[in-house]
Structure formats: structure tokens, C-alpha cells
Image (cartoon, rainbow, N blue to C red; front, top):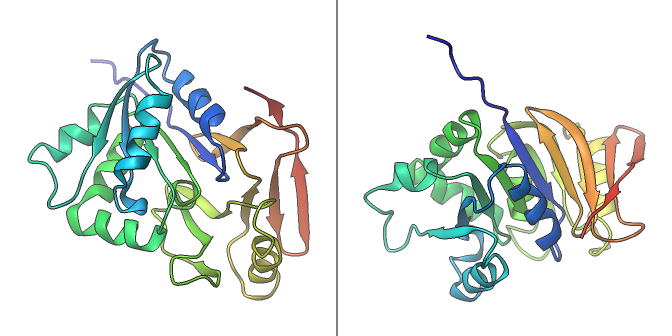
Length: 227
């Protein structure tokens, strides 16, 4: 029997208004009305944020939400895996990862990735897929965190053009503290991966883009305008 080889895809977004990049991610599913799981763990499962995304995607997708409070659903495995795309919102990355690991969501997300479910997320939802990232999870000060899921190699830094402290810290971490090289993204900008290879940068704004950041080097990446 032939084994079906599924393309692993992810769209990681640099925060801000991420609707255009999320819709691009949903287009990668190849379905007119994809099944989409909204994951608001990083934002303490804010009902307001969930409602906003249900409204934004109304008519574009069949949206459900993952809730881990007061406890995960009995059908957690099917809740995560029976999707065409998974969208992770912003908030506290460290808290989100801790909850995921306690309940085994991290393992299920890895299975979803391998099964070809399109992974997507903005801000905390960008950082989580990488090995490391720049986060404000531990207070208003920023810090480097080396505790991501590691589905994508290296590090990530969202909010590159809308939070002025992000760029200097990310550069210092990589230049001076052996932080893994990686990608930075301006607000709303999406990095599109097939497997672990970056294949495209998409941007809803002229002049906004993403960057490849390595020791002593920061290279702007060409972005295709969307939205």
C-alpha cells in the first residue's frame, strides 16, 4: 500500500493585525471551508479574542476553539488532529507552553504537523513553533527563551517594527550570547514554511517584511504583498 506523504506547512506571523496572513495560511489547506482550531492558551483563553476570530473567519472557515480550562476536553486528541489548520494567538508564550506540555498538547501539535495540518500563529503563536524566541513572558522586560516546540529550527522574534526593544535585544542575543540564529518579522508579516524551509514571506503592508538574523548579519527578505 502506498504511503501518503503530506506536506508540512506553517505560517508564522510577527504580531499585530494578522488577519491577512492567517487567511493566507488557510488558503494553503486547499479547502473552501477549512476546519480551523483557534488556540488562545497564551491569552488565558480570552473569550473576547476567540469571538473576534470567530467573527473574522465567519464564512471563510468552520472554526472551533481549544479550551484547557477548567480541564481539557475528553476528545482532546480529535479536537487537535481533526483539523485543516490550527491558529495560535498571542500572549504569554511560557505559560502556554507549560500548559500544553502538562496536558500533552505539544505532542498532539507535533502529530498534526506531521499529518499535514497547517500550523499558524502570531506573536506567541509565532515563537512557539521554533526552538527559541524573544518573549515578554516573564515581565515587561524582554528575554530570550530557549524552550519552544522546535518543529522549526532556530529562533524567532515577532514585533520587529512595532516594539522598539525587540530588535536590539534579538541582535545582542544572537551576536553575543550564542542564541540560535533565526527570523524576525514585522507586525502582520507572515513567514511561510514547507517542512523546515522558508519558501515565502507575505506582508499586508508596503515596506513591512521579515529578516534572517545571524551573528553579525541581518538580511531583509523580499516580501509578497497580500490583503
